[in-house]
Amino acid sequence: MTVNITSKDMFILMHLLAFPNPSEMALSIRASALVFEDPKSKELLDRIKRIAPSELNALIIGETGTGKELVARHLHELSAKRNGPFLAVNCCALSETLIESELFGHEKGAFTGAMTAKQGWFEAASGGTLFLDEIGDLPQSMQVKLLRVLQEREVVRVGSHKAIPIDVRLIAATNVKLEEAVMAGRFREDLYYRLNVAALNLLPLRQRTGDVLPLAEHFLKVYGQRFGCPEATIAPAAKQILLAHTWPGNIRELENVIHHALLVTRDLIIKPTDLNLSQLPSFPKSADSDAGDFERLVSAFQALCEQEYPDLYARAEQALLQVAYKHTYRNQLATARLLGLSRHVVRARLIQHHILTAGEPETDKSHPVLPQGVSGPPIIVRDFFPKDNDYKEPFLAEASQECWGF
Image 1 (cartoon, helix red, strand yellow):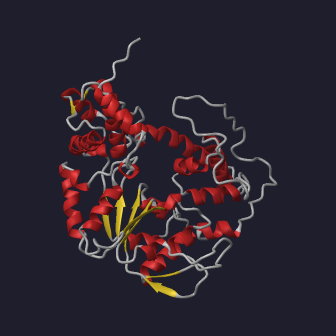
Image 2 (cartoon, rainbow, N blue to C red):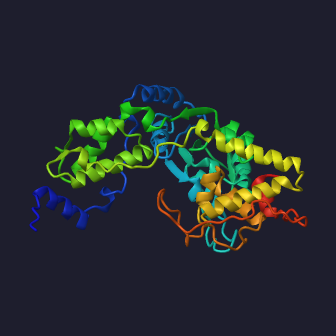
Image 3 (cartoon, rainbow, N blue to C red):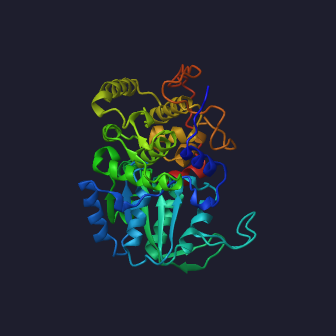
């Protein structure tokens, strides 16, 4: 079989084999909030322009991949702190044991391994903007300390008693409904009000289709220049498919689709066959479709209440955690996402119910979460509610009390 290699193919291949400047071959091409062209996005940009000049804390709410960091950077660039630093931190990526040190800094000798004093993210961002992504994943012990920092405008390093003044504008982001987390006791109400001074709701890409083609053209232009084919275009039929897709991965998915299409296209015209679109559902089932399941669940709880089971709440929570943990093949992060909790709360409750030992790693990777439609080992859960009368409520560790706030 003969394979014809064009000059364009050779150019791309050479760039993939040898990067003359690694910093120019970043894995992700950051778009600009100014690429947003949909009327709904323009309304959001107009709101950003009004909010940006103030020093108000901002809360950006949106699904994963919708461009929350883009909006945060746009806020920073329009603010009086534009000449200061912009630092982005993903709260979910911070180690539970070192999160206080990462945010607020530490002194030399504050803990084992603290060989030198270190600034935290708040100090490093002084004079500029600090962006805290996935704020809903902060453990409650840290929520209390963050609230005090926002109120007093000063930080205290780990191992120190000296307060350090800071001049930072905080922008937080979340992909969960913090109101529900507050009602469930997973997020402090006072911190929610402190953050939610200026709320910005970022719609998913499927609800602002006017941004799809401008973003696609932006990614096409940037990747085209990097691969030596700036004249690449998108065929009309491919544009229609892009507009019709629901984009469950939002802007991040669109970027990857254009990147892939530019690599596989043969004549610098992206056609429908060049588009590698995700088959994942764009959003969960509606509440109506789940109504029957929850009605049966309510009936089951009603029957249990009538039988006056002892410690019903603890046993029900334990049963739900067991099922969810096994369903995700003992993956704590996946369990947290399934239940709508932070991973820190899930870990504490797994330990409390003796489903997980305190010394076990945070995520057991021996059983990865399988994609939808891929079969795995059968899961058999025989007893949802223990029937022995000797059931005793597990001991609540001090670490769990601190994590839950009660």
